[in-house]
Amino acid sequence: MVDIDSAVRRFVSDVWHDSREETAYELVAEECPGLGGSGPAAVLAWHRERRTAFPDLRYKIVDLIVSGERAALHWRAAGTQRGAFGPVPPTGQVVSYSGATFLRFDPVGKIIDVWSVNELFQLLQQLGVEVLPPLTGAGGSAD
Image (tube, rainbow, N blue to C red; front, side, top):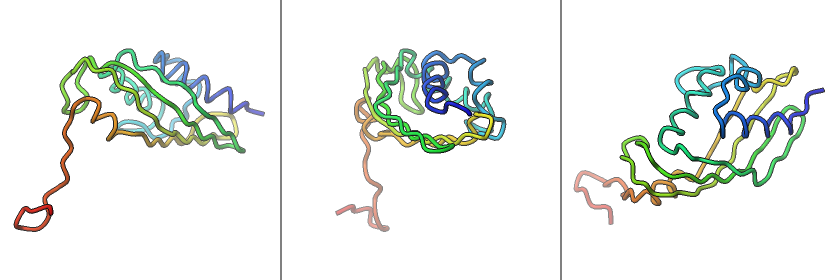
């Protein structure tokens, strides 16, 4: 039987923190979605992109719940923006934000699905990005 709790913790420590490619290839199935494709390379691509913007980004597991072949992970992350984050140029700003990641494992213990939601709006505010609501109607008034 696969120890999913340990696999999730290893995924966070090795892949999210340290970008250990060999661990991603051990834990992530070829059909697992990632950045621009699927499989370990696509999952690593997402983390490389985030790591380029926040090289010292660290994650703390707040809560981890495992049920059958599924895991729900509540996490907090903090890091310093040293590279571009999408259209936001480097600010040197330290950010802290939370998120939740949901994983599904196959019978041999490989991750076949990963889905995350995080406080992106809060992150952008910490970087000093002004987020304005879209203008409504043809007249351009948002009142």
